[in-house]
Image (cartoon, rainbow, N blue to C red):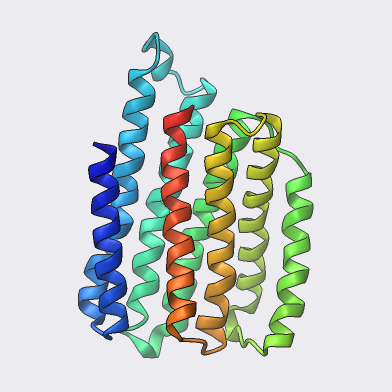
Amino acid sequence: MIYLLLAIFLVSWNLFIFNVRKKKRLDGFYFKGMTSFSFLLIFAYSVYTYMVNQDSGVNLLLFYYPPIRLIIFMGLGLVLGLIGDLFLELQYFYPDNRIKQIRYGMIAFLVGHIFYILGMSFFDSFSYISLIIGAFMVVVVFFASKLMKLDFKEIRIMSYLYTFVIFTMVGQSIILSINNDFNMFSLSFMVGAILFGISDLVLAPIYFGNKVSDIYVVANLGTYYLGQVLIALSVMFL
């Protein structure tokens, strides 16, 4: 089943990329939705696999059971990822409200990252080192945006806040992996989180620096979707 779901993901992702490159935005919107929904299906199958592998189903009904809280918040994070994807894609249909659509998408992803952080914190423990990583990356993005002449327009503050939250999430995933000896669950989540962070670093020049070449677009979408799939798959290894 997992191979079928991954095949669906790859087919819809390639069709999305194809339509984006051909400037067929409406078809691209549909296939983007299908691609994003496919990582929710992968997550659902991962949760099913986890439940089947449990010796007892009693704890699965208890919210205080750390893996269940982790799963719930991860699921919420992935759902908000789907919502954020659709908001971002709407900018191409309403160019006069482009910044508004980007802002809504950023808000959806930002809340999703907070859910990821909460899930990891309930499962393991929150590390303040992740806040330092988030703050450090805000400084990096600030100076990099000056060098690359990126114009964040009226969402400058939102962009820096978003940078802080996503790289706090990335930092927490690294701490989670260290604390769990880089087991398959924590390693899959960490690599997925890092790829997610990279995808947003690549996205910034596309949205705010007019870097719209195929290399930038494919790099952004490739790292983003692979990151979300790895996060979705990580539950299978709990």
